[in-house]
Length: 264
Image 1 (cartoon, rainbow, N blue to C red):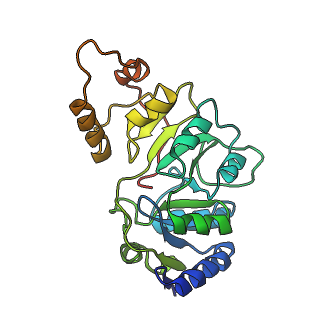
Image 2 (tube, rainbow, N blue to C red):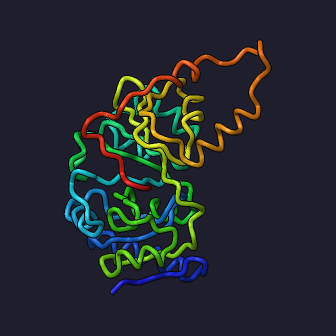
Image 3 (cartoon, rainbow, N blue to C red):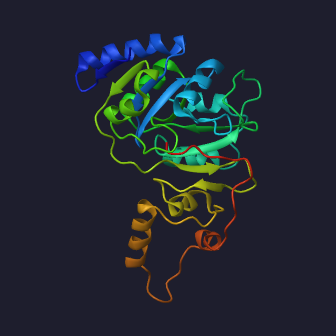
């Protein structure tokens, strides 16, 4: 039987977080809000729990979940290297809706699925999620919905889809939106966009100078940025930066086998 906590009430919030700390080592699934949509998570270092998560989602090992962390230090312990761009991106966008794919730390004993030696990491910008992650450590987290179904923006929507497969529901109220995190692959020679999301490509290029893209249509967040840029277009003859302009016309498809998580 699932337990649900209304985290707008301080006492319920405290009880819910305490329950999560007990539930995670027991392989139980936990639903909680993030800065994008609701997520469902398990201990990233317990392979049977990860399998249970994938089964609840109706998903195979070919789509491994990303790992959410509560601190940058926790993230760096999970990867072999952040590469030449990772730290700058973390400084600019974490906590926030940016997922980074890096080479996984080979000394770690875990099994997230068919990751091909990589791990997708993110630090969400949500107070309840961060508090939870600092108590539990890194969690393998997927969006709290059945595979192919709409992402849940409330605990009730998550419960409607996942039901009693989840042990604990932390109800933090509606999430701010349903635009997923942007996914950036740092395992290639240049940063490669695998999924457009809440952070526009232009902002990424403002940090790293070059991002290879696959030509996907812009989501609402990018469209708004493009419109804003059009409105503030410089007068003829005004100097502009060259880094983002050099990258804007280049389209590169994601590596074969690199399958980003569906929503979070």
